Length: 210
Image 1 (cartoon, rainbow, N blue to C red):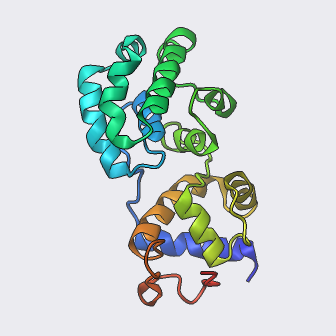
Image 2 (image 1 turned 30 degrees about the vertical axis):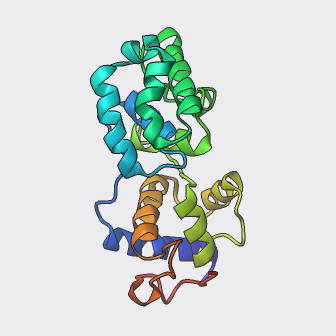
Image 3 (image 1 turned 180 degrees about the vertical axis):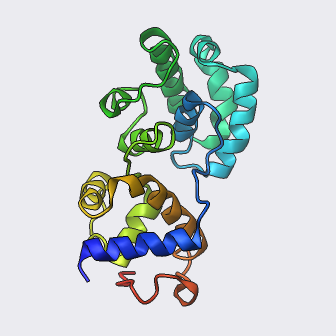
C-alpha cells in the first residue's frame, strides 16, 4: 500500500469514526473565526470559546472591534495567554478588514496571510471552513498523527507537512480530514499519555512511529 492508498483508507475510516467532525471553535461569522484562531495559539479551543463570549458582547462587529482600545481587548483575552500580542494582532486585523475589505474576510489565501497574526494554519482553516475551499490545517494533532501513521516521514515543520499531504490527500477531503485528526488526536492518539492503540480504528494500518 503506497502513501496515497494509505491516505484514502485512513480518510474513510476516520469518516466512519467521526462522521460529524467540525471545527471546535465556535463562530457564526467569518471574522469571529479569524479572532478565535488567533486566540487559540497556545490555548485550548474550549477556553477560547468561553473568552470570546465576553469579547463579542462588548465588541459585536468588525467596526466595534477595530475602534476598540487595544488595552480593552487585551484585558478580555488575557486568559488565553499572550494577551498583549494577541490583542495587538486582533486590533490591527480588524482595522484592515474594515478599511480594505468592507468589513469582510477575504477569500484569498495570500490575502489572508498578509493579515496580522495569520499564518498558513489559520489561513487554511478559514479557507476550508468559511469558504469551502481545499485546505489542509497542519496543527499539532495533524503533524503528530500523520507522522505516527506514516503518511509523512519524520517531518515536523508545519508547511512541509502541509506540502507532503497535498500530494496524497484529495483536495475536497483535506479540511474535514484535518478536523477528524483533531478528534482522533484528543480521544485516541494522544500526545500527553500513551496512545490508546487498542481502541484505534487505524491500528492495523498505522506505522506506529511513536
